[in-house]
Length: 323
Ligand code: IPE
Ligand code: IPE
Ligand code: MG
Ligand code: MG
Ligand code: MG
Image 1 (spheres, helix red, strand yellow):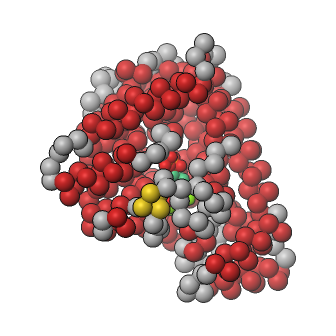
Image 2 (cartoon, rainbow, N blue to C red):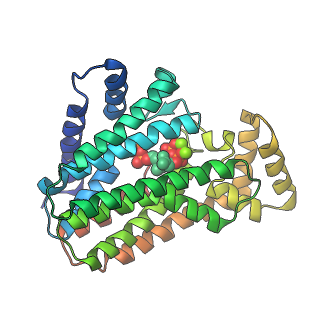
């Protein structure tokens, strides 16, 4: 049997080949060059890989779903380009962000274009359920925008409850993973039951993914700007937990820092140590584990296939990811 690592690298090669064709030699360069730049970045390609494995897990094959897999990665890259404008970030995948390398107008247009390129590829899918697939894809984008709106709204709110945080990350991050797996199941002619199992699986996986991402923000070498969430006053799970569980003195310090117009490097280290002493870091890592275990439980309801095994491996990858 082929190892999971070699499968992953095969999938990545196939996906990257297709992504490299998207903006090749096209004019005007002011549109296509930044698009090509984004797609050449070293992304993990988690969403298209999930779509392919979901398709395979119900008996479909990669050739049927590759257009949709490419579409979901193009869509994801749109969200990253616009997210970096919204979050004022300079670094993505270890490289300077599009709006910094060029300018904001260029990045807005590149993002818009990526959405259209995503649909162009999605609609190449040969399926008698293409209308349903397009509908799921579209509803997913709407939910993602709602999630991104909540994420921005929360910046200016002093307190956020854990359940509000969870609703926000389900929309901004987990929904895209859910539609990836649902579309994979539909293309692979899976049952309604399999679609809902893999949907549930991806909801759990997606939440684990974003919770882990919140921790990566304060780890160096994620390829993204260090402590950007803190500078931007994001209500990450770390912050939400600390605000409810730190001792009173530390809560006051947290809130005071988040009220400052500019958060400096000293503030960042203060906040990090409050996260540490309040147990917010261990709480958060526990949450990642719990959600991964929930995903495993969902996955075990699927029939046994190589793809089911690979999806378990994908969970391990997300549990231990360093970028
Ligand atoms: C980053 O997604 C955005 C989040 C939802 C946290 P990834 O971590 O999948 O980014 P790439 O595509 O691998 O760079
Ligand atoms: C991820 O949110 C959600 C989307 C990109 C839609 P983040 O803002 O946390 O993602 P990163 O950390 O910039 O990749
Ligand atoms: Mg961001
Ligand atoms: Mg963001
Ligand atoms: Mg983040």
